[in-house]
Image 1 (cartoon, rainbow, N blue to C red):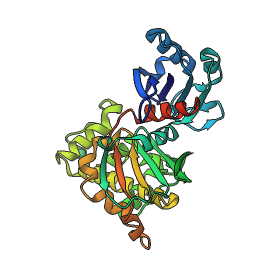
Image 2: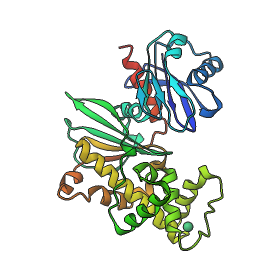
Image 3: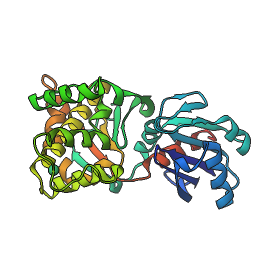
Amino acid sequence: MWLSADVGGTKTLIGVFAPGAARPEPRIVREYTTLDFDSLDDLIGTFLDETGATGIGAAAFGVAGPVNGLVARMVNVPWVADAAPIGERLGCPVTLLNDLEAMAHAVPVLEPDELATLQEGIQTPTGNAALIAAGTGLGEALLHNIDGRFIPAASEGGHADFAARTPRELAFVADLSQSLGRVDHDRVISGPGLVNLFRFTHRSHACRVVDLNDDHAALPAHISECALARRCAACVEALDMFVEAYGAEAGNLALRSVATAGVYLGGGIAPKLLPALESGRFMDAFRDKEPLADLLRTIPVRVILNPSAGLLGAATFAATLTD
Ligand SMILES: [Zn+2]
């Protein structure tokens, strides 16, 4: 049995997996509020106590933040994730992974019905793949193809500089940099990024549908629901700008990694925005990369629909620790 977790700034999915035909199979999965715990060890102790899970042969945890050996300083969580006491508790190999690196381990084992295709493309068996995931922030990971096998590599590309491509985006960056300083992708292509775009497109008149004083965590969903129902033109523009920025950065990632085996969209936002992503705006921005537009046209682009892909990826990695 393998223990894995996907530890986010808001919630943590944790589960015990058993060997399966094609990939680890979940046996027990629980969801916890991350900040209800004082440490990762505390959270795992609670899970083991509540479920009585035993016989763990290896464990791997994906955490939102850069990982340094067995320790990760998490973004948006006031504690350091330390795998050493967990290894002592379980008496088995334990590994920490960056959350996107963990999700990347799930990509090769996803089933066709767990994916939605934005561009069929022509998959190159020897090519690299890439993963981009907008959620609370923007995460990116690479899957290097080494001798026909994908080797995931973490990245902090979501914190690289956001490059404006249109006069509206230039005006948005000028506006946002006044209050935030440097504008990275994370400030634009994420739930809070959609709220930043909303503020920009509603500068001249307040929104009659979405109230910025509402529950902050629910605002991105309110804005996208309003835009998808076309109830407010400025909300529609905010979502259009979000989708274009997401498509453009997915294209940048494809260029940087030459991802001819595919670009995958993970995270919680893409499945909810599928109608907007399928409208053509996302793929137009993805392909708008002259002189390499022809290359971008051949790259498969798919949305990951499995909401537990990060957890599955961590379990997939944990399984390799006992091979
Ligand atoms: Zn509006």
